[in-house]
Amino acid sequence: MRRAAILLALAALALSGASPAPAPVDLSVVLAEAPAAKLSDYRLFVDAGARQPNGRVTPYDVATPLFSDYAVKHRYVFTPKGEPAAWRDQGPLAFPVGTVLVKTFAYPADFRRAEQDERFLETRLLIRKAGGWTAQTYLWNAEQTEATLKRVGARLDVSFIGQDGAPVAFEYAVPNQNQCKECHSADGVMQPIGPKARNLNHDFAYREGTRNQLSQWRTLGLLAGGPAPADAPRTADWTDASAGLEQRARAYLDANCGHCHNPAGMASTSGLFLNAEEDRPAHLGLNKAPVAAGRGSGGLKVSIDPGHPERSILIHRMASDDPGVMMPELGRALVHEEGVAVVAAYIASLKPAP
Image (cartoon, rainbow, N blue to C red; front, side, top):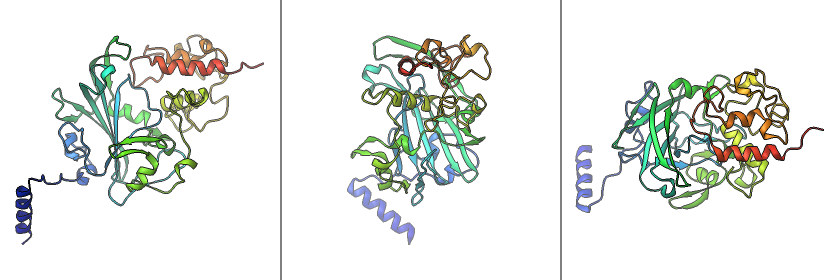
């Protein structure tokens, strides 16, 4: 009887000209011990090119993102139906088992026409399984029709035209699994970095209209608990000239450095903590001598010399593309000139010690 009912339903769809609904995200694949061989195996998207998200796969962004060699990033979140993330005042939201955080890295041929000729390079998944978070990377083929599992990383030639019309060419690094763990580690345990309440507390242009992300996540059943957006913490957009210079620079440092430079991160022994919650001047680097003054210090004496970006180790390392000097040491090959300029202006605005 059930088979007959299915056949009748399919026949009715065929007569009406309607397409059958896509199969939902495959939770058995999401929760499997071994990662899927192909990105499409998860059914996170309904098209081969991963441009159309499946049901409950929701786009989002963060107020100030990590700089990744100017890559465009497409972010999505999936949680099982009836299992929202729980509110946390600090740190990432408490996501349920079965959550998938999706981030695709892409480049347009010409950033002056960013919506045209976009090439996907890799899609990274963070999956919350019963035993904790796991990270997987999928590399896109030249035809842009499938992404396959890549455990050991890769090097890709990338070229594009920048916003200023100048050509840019460099070697893009796809991380290996150990490198993912370095950045996503808190007290030795893997966790997400970006989806914190303060990073989500801003407007996002959904297909149905622009809404605050925290409000939208609650409406969609992706988030439970917490205050109204107006009463919730909020990270500044580092590109927003109307925001205060300190707020912009601190947001940039939090996104690009704070995931390692915090008391629970991989760089905790440095004593330099650049996460948004830190408020102690010495730990923020003001007049702080480095723990180890190697080549990375450039012969400079302190991490931040108030009023003097040119004498600050922080700027020296941000402005370098030398692998033995630059910070962050992973995730980029190019210098983020605009980000360096904002942080340098902030340091220049600080009053030197009397």
